[in-house]
Image 1 (tube, rainbow, N blue to C red):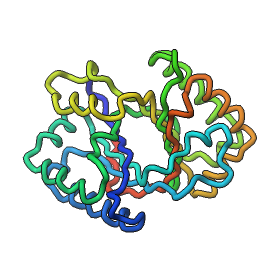
Image 2 (cartoon, helix red, strand yellow):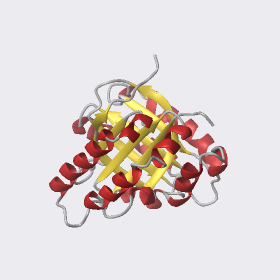
Image 3 (tube, one colour):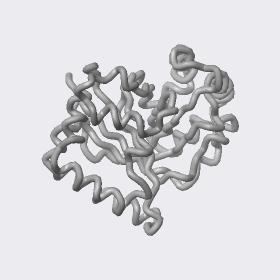
Length: 254
């Protein structure tokens, strides 16, 4: 497997920190990561601070999935599993792990999901995002989920009213242990201890929180939500509204 990886983690703050203090402490943690020699193995890094509450006009169908238990979503890009392996086994990686307890309530690896990205729309100017950690309905296997999710794209991006609002849209597909070379033992271990029941992570980018709210209030959201319910267990899924803070820009090949 040589596909680039996109590692998401759902962050809960250390209980001793306020929301504002957490954001500052998280940034310091990120700066530490980027200062270490191991950082040469990463290719892009984002901090997405979870908004205090979902937009007031959140679509009714996805309301049960809005989650206020998390304070941030971290996203780290790698060019390959081998690069992630090198970061994870680097002699200075324990330094980074030791710093996690100052920012987070638990180890990042426990709330992470490693994915490959299917980028369906890519435009600049994203300042707010809807990130959905999706769990499949009972009886929907991985192949069926992928097929139904691919069809779902047409509802999200096909409507004329979403053309202006949605700047970026991606489906992020969790990878399985048997898709990773046996040589990448650290990567294989991390896959087994994170959010192992996530069927996919959707990431939708907007120019502002107001545009995110406008998207959720669109008449077409009803149809989108009803279709989502046919293959996603919304009660067990988690939606968060966030900003996007680019800690390190992604190097994308021309």
